Image (spheres, each protein chain N blue to C red):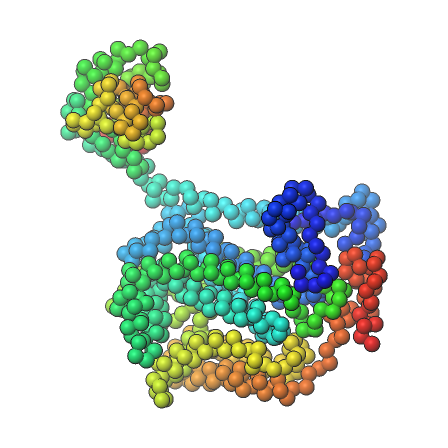
Length: 439
Length: 198
């Protein structure tokens, strides 16, 4: 697909040959995740997280379809139907634990995947579209996760729905009518629950479709790599299968062990006990927090406490959405041609400060509202925008990067290139060795 | 998944050829073993992961909790019947008249599609209490004949309106497409007036 030396599909099995001639799906698979997709040979384990995110999406879709067979999207019975899944449905408890913790698992993977992209400059040319489709997926995930959290119709579900739909009421003039329109009522009730269920079922398939576009866009330049140096020749790559199917398989094994620990031993560690109280429109829980993966954004939302030209409420909502939408413009904010932060000594410091800043925001998002926590959240929120809007453009302009390796092969081999040539290359002897190309 | 390619061909150039590497000399490389072991492990794991996805289709605990039902039969006169509900299915409980019992006993069981006597289909000493599922053995419709004035079919028992199966006064199939007699569920008389079904 991407490189001239990508191996064409040559079916050995006559049946596959017959199918391929009529419907070239085997060819497509071979070129996408088989031996026909050349991948840089130096990918580290952070490159497992794309496949892991795909796995998490599949787990959520499969368990979700099954849970929908037992769930009632009826305001009078939704809460009980979830308890029925836990107690009465055969193996229902494990399916729900997988789905419930699977959402956290999915977000955890995606956050690592996003920071991988930030560190290794995955948003830079020629992969801007891959990155932007990723941001679209992230936004869709947030919507899906929010609506899914409403479905058990507990106290946190209900008040989460109330608060999140309240964002829309911040919009001048049309805000409140829009909120009522979206809820189909003045407060969350049957109409909201049913439409949330319908959309919660729909959106994962939209995510799957955007994922296909994203993989399509990715396979045009091919995967990036930890040096950020472009692939130059066949020696820089390995076929996806068996090399990266094996590496991803190992990563999937490790990820599933960690996931299983949560499902079987800590199933409630990431949830909130208030959601086991049935929704009550007359009482708000004393301490209302979203799920952990929304904490940083929740902190940004809460950081605006005074009206300044426009109301504080609108500032909060705008800032919160901007915090995600900023990611669309990363390619144009970071002008440095160097992709990998490994070769950017100044930016590397700011990258880790940003990681810490997001963690602080996460802390503030779940903390009780005290003057100190609010002040901390305000500083952290300000820094978040400062990083992307001021620091990133300035650093990329003035920073002096470290020397880049001449090629991927040179970066991984230290005079051992001969014995480490990719499969099938040693006998051809045609390709020049990397150090030679470096002169 | 696992491609156990030509064992003579090393995966990476420079790697010593298999037999020399593992010292077995039987052509099985260490890598082949790892390959098969890893994919087998993943296959077994995938199989186990599928189990809950299939198990959830089975009747849940609240459905299984409906597996016994007690019915008061003290109000049923000879010649009358009621429909009870057991596991969400209709059960016909009918007190036969002496004429209906006699009619059922006159039949030569050798001529029946599903040979059974009335005695085999009722409890000892309770020949007058015919308790069957109200589910036609053809394709599951509820036959007519338990309610007053309903069509009892040509044999005075039940008649299924869907595809025209006729059952006699012992609930046995006599005419039409149904293959079996109406099913007699497991039941017992807990007293003279109460039947526990299931």
